[in-house]
Image (tube, rainbow over all chains, first blue to last red; front, side, top):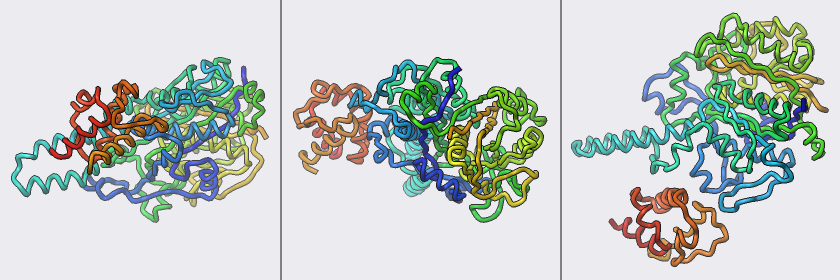
Length: 449
Length: 83
């Protein structure tokens, strides 16, 4: 079985659009929380009043062309930006192959032995919303043309305020919102012809994509995999936010903006909605990485999955399948659960998740490994979260430093939570993700330095 | 806006929508014959032109300008803006 090394990484996030900035912000315990736009409340009062916006990168400055920006959803564009960073980080040379289409080939590698695996909960949801909002807007404006003067203008102004700038219907809206476009866009950009997958597993999507990529290299099918997660659920009228809000999953904690998101704290009041983000990793077989003489960030030594078969959105209360997954994860790397030094938990800050997860962590890891929640900084980036947190595990192992878990003033259990930037010699780090539907996923990383 | 200004903006829109940074474009350049524009290029160009000229271009425009030169596209835009 081939060993799998992480040799490059890229990121688009609310805390920075390059690895260095992102990691500095994480270690400094930064977070980006704002009050929801006023217009969202006019469509129905929400329980949660805060969110974490994702300012989109300057795509042109990141090297993308105008036609690409027109033809792709932000979830795909963010994956393209993060993948390019990751390839550069891995020092993988590229050659431009078709100037007009702005595509590349990965030098000195068989394209049939390179794959793309991207997790996303909703694919090009933003493009679907834009298309739908535009159709509705144009339909409504047409309908009110016969209304009396004054009333027509008043209604038009109202709709303009609500929907923002309504552009021409994007001819490409359909391929833009198909979830597979995220992976296909990345694969086409880099001339990849091996296994190309989109992994749609809600909040476990990013982790499941990296698991699939890892296994494809382990079993010898691929030499390189571009793997990660990308999510962008933003919409003009806050529809996704409201959908989570009506499920009573979003934070209602009252306090300063930077205090509302409190994973594993007794005072937690559910999760902070994030508009998304993206992390992409370059995974390589050890043989391939050695040939290129590159230094890895970390090694992926274990993968495990399980399925609750219980409920479309609730965790199975006993946690049996999550427990099984955690045990299988250690077994997959032929290590003991007690060898794990650091756990980047799912840690959403929902009442149910943190109660169940912390109970299992207390039961299975008596050595009390360091535990933090990257969601305490970013909020819940949904399908991107597992990939972002795997990246955080790799950086923590490489640098022997862990970021603080924010707002953990009264921990729900006496575990070894990281509440301030902490340095330690780390050997094994685990990352766990659990998604709506009952999908559970775990990745185990090992330090290579 | 006179025709020469419109032509310059169309050239810019073509550079952006078809990624033609080094192409030599003139008012007599034909979109299909000289630039090999396909249906995806036309759709992208129409969205770009709408943005550049701040006007609503009907969906039928794709067929109307499919065999056109840049100069003829400029005439089409000028007519549309005057309508």
